Length: 101
Image 1 (cartoon, rainbow, N blue to C red):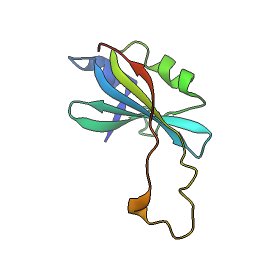
Image 2 (cartoon, helix red, strand yellow; image 1 turned 135 degrees about the horizontal axis):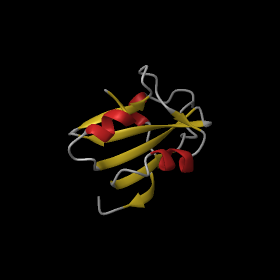
Image 3 (cartoon, rainbow, N blue to C red; image 1 turned 180 degrees about the vertical axis):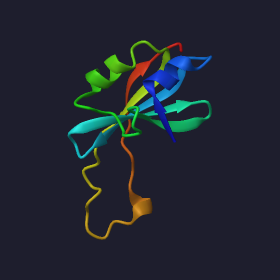
């Protein structure tokens, strides 16, 4: 599912439970938000994912919203190992923010 900044602003409860800043190809970050009981990718008005050049840029874009928790999901160093099954992959999660919401 997708959501824009404008749609986030129009919600009756502006609180974002969890922001996951997911590394894309080790160069950009996209924001996966946990709101209204669902995971939603932050997109532009055309439905394309918003990509940020760093964690700080993504956090700045969302600074107007109360956020309970923010985690960074950096690229895994072992994801391309030969013979590694999909279910053997582990996700690294680095908490960067814990708020009151």
